[in-house]
Amino acid sequence: MRQYTVWLGGARIGTARESETWTASGVTLRRVETLRFLRGDSAVDVATTIEIEANAALVPERVRWTELAGAARTAEATHDARGWHSETLTTGVSLAADAVPADALPAELVPLLVRRDRRFAGDVFLVAQGFIGGPARVEAIAPRRMIARVEIGTTPAEATIDLADDGMPERVVDGEGVIELRATEGVAAAPFAPVDLIAATSIPIRGRRGHALVLDGELALPAVPGQRAVPGAGGMLVELDAALPGDLPPGAPGPDRTRAIAAIVARVRARITPSLAGAPASSRDAHAVAGDCTTFALAYAALATARGIPTRVVTGLRVDRDRLVRHRWAISWTGARWIAVDAAFAAAPAGGDLVGLAVHDADAAGLVSGEAALSSVHAASWARPDAD
Image (cartoon, rainbow, N blue to C red; front, side, top):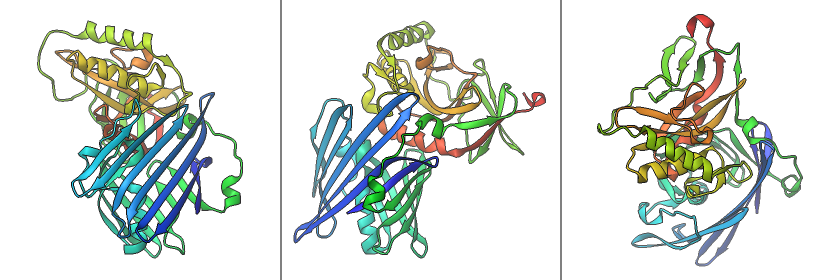
């Protein structure tokens, strides 16, 4: 049994436990991850169990996934010579098992292969994210230190892994600042006070408020409506104004859909109650009646797309007084121009307080790609008045 404590922003947010059961025919790997945190004033508890059956050569044969976050959701898939096949799904679960490469491996199985082979290269998928994935590589950069990279969508994700004496991870740090530390049973079982996840992932904004931000980080901001970004010596200067048109490729010309967009926003606002009490939303929550900004963005995108309005989702940051908080909204083509649509705040067009970092589809792969982009901003400050 291996125990890990899970940390974010210097605060503990959970525990993970892994076990391997070997027989003559192969191994069953079981990982149970329990997270406990606050989102604003709302307490959130999420328990995820992933069980993988593989043969003695570590070729997977079956994967089971269960998530408890208020309601229970489960999925199961089997693997044979023809590839992966989804078997059991609960309502609200979308599983892309039939679309992943036949030789793709669940990411949780990769550490066992690295322990055996000291490296890994191949396709992987994320079980808890509906089997989305892409090509991955794990290679040594120093004794007992590995770098893991996986390409999901347009944004690669990366993690640094330090190995223990048994060849399994002792410390894992991913690009979003989540850290897993190997722990004794006593440390893993120790109680901890839940931290506010929004505060832990927010970025303080230095200086006096203005209409432009200077962002420091590895940035390539998309030209979405509501912002204009210009590289500078001190960082990326980002002007924020709802009237800024952006510079995305235009859609097909057509009748003005602005009123239809506003009507959809009103419908979403009437249906969904703002709530941070659940786990962070995913593409499986597009029909939810309560949720966070992702829930609003996905619900709006689904309805707009059904009405024939070209729409994509944006992952980025929202100005919340003296900090930047993680946020999601949408962009839609009115027939003449792209506009930002923030259904969570009933804004169409939106902007002036939004910094878009990634534009993507309203599916699990897009959401994971967008999450990776959030780690690109390291610091923020208001621009000097003469730079506004």
